[in-house]
Length: 312
Image 1 (cartoon, one colour):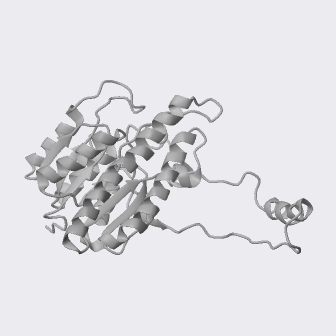
Image 2: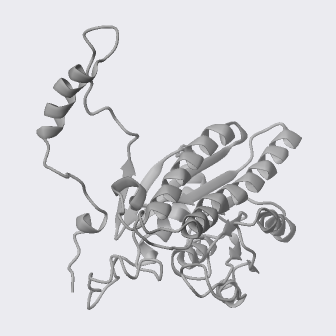
Image 3: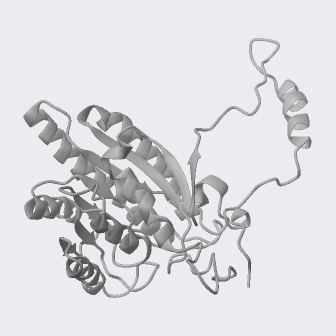
């Protein structure tokens, strides 16, 4: 079989379960040596005693099939532990080539009920966790590029969500973090392009312990692959990590169930110009109110409603 990632090394965060596990296995299947990172807390809200077992088990699974893998059980939201994660990849495999940021937690609540701690913890793991690993990986690639005077090989795949694109009423912390990850990704893509590094983000739909409530009403097929299986997402991550994706940079892609959609940057829907030096309240009311009156009241869409799946 083709091994497009042969000779490359990768870090996958949150890789002990669900999407991260599927992504780590896919990168290994394509030939990469993998650092499997997972803090190992049992609660999807980031609670419970940390355990090395999830990361160790996935690393052992990769090695059992002839691949190369080591486990890292640090918290990527901790700046120093994120540094050690990148250092481990370099120490074990000589360099880092691919970074897949997937680690996350959920602490859902409506915005009027959410505590400061629930907000901070989700922003910390998702957004700060993405920044921490990106920071140290970027520094590694920049140093290597400066040492050789030439571009290096580097790939970043970040994990956003349609909660950012479509809204999610009970997840203001999660939606904000995922929107921030897109901003981090596009900024990183511009900053690192000259060093040979690409950065892209995906919005995956998958049935995992993180999404068990969201997809609880969608039945799994009697046969064939579940359209919400993480195995539908992992091949795109493998592609974005590969040499074939060298021209894919600063992109946002939705992926699930055999479908990949490229999300365009926001476009201007309508434009109004003032008839004088600046708008007045009356003029704005005259142009904007009719515009929105022509649209269905409360028009919105959610990720779940457009899945095309059957509820049980």
